[in-house]
Image: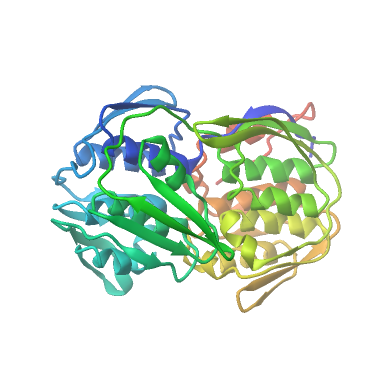
Length: 437
């Protein structure tokens, strides 16, 4: 495989893109968004905001405007809201819909219809909303929002930025203070954006977690949003460059929010040649460039406390661990069982199919690294999970034999242009880096 070289930018952060559209719809005035991720997941959110009465307009690639209706001003949609493959959009939208006196029905694709929504239904029911769903709280989901939503005081049973955000979004429409206690600190894009649009948010440290308080019924004022590059997307070319000998790349403008950089910290512990440059603040979020060079990696023991800061990156970390010297242990991965697929099982199957020994012990995963290229040559079942597909394709770059995925179509939901970007990094040796089925 030819070395990967060059300077690239990855698509905008998906978490921030969803929130920018939603907060723009709740603000007074017109919000300008630059760098918006235009994958299918985020475009579903844009369509949903239009259905709820906001004016959402694309001005140019990545440049959008949202004319909002103010807090509490969303209108009843005329049709079912189809959120496609996006669990983030569905769960956050539940918070908005629960606190508006409107009736709505939400559905998604086959993968999303299999994911549990009870974790947001339970706390949101306490604000006065009523829900009707399939068994286990699964979509399709009918929501009758509360006429006078009550503020919530909720302690998260597990660390989840999506559940936290759903509760805070519902709290925007309630009189009084909404309070959320999280056992482990999770990504805080919702809190940052609430402040950016003018809401009063207080955060206090409690053990390993945090207590977040939001004063309800603020007037959110439209504010420009610059969406940084998604660190979860940057993970794929980053790991690829670490594994393919002779590679050296620069990934520009990546979000460096401390609650999203668990993968970077872990790779550094593994001995990765990774440095940060041009660090800066944009729209309340830390941003910088990643400078990556190929080199040997060693095994790592990842503590459970780090999971919330890298929950989406474990499949690609497992690929890095397969190349490392020694046995890596990833602890406390139970949350991976309820992602787009059972990512714990799917990641183990991905590695096993390509000659790498993996063990699952409860919620821990052990990867027996080979200290060099794995055999490869396997066919990976992706279960309609874009991160499994991309991780398998990156594994194939450094393996001794090509790796095939059964379906690469879902990559576009989060990383439009993935194949073109990766192929563009191939050096003078020519050929293609990845070619999803």
